[in-house]
Image (cartoon, rainbow, N blue to C red; front, side, top):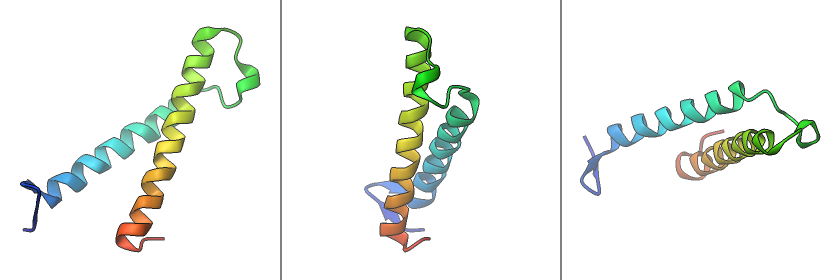
Length: 71
């Protein structure tokens, strides 16, 4: 198995999949889908977490395309 910086590539991919699954769950479990629906500071925090998770998932998708020529 190929090594990358002392870490097995397979393990790195498993870790990335776990992170993606967690981010997807974060997006799915947050009910606030629009900033306008936020009524208090806690709502804005939850909305921001969702927005951050969505952005990171999109960035990971972009990196995958660049690295592995995935669609």
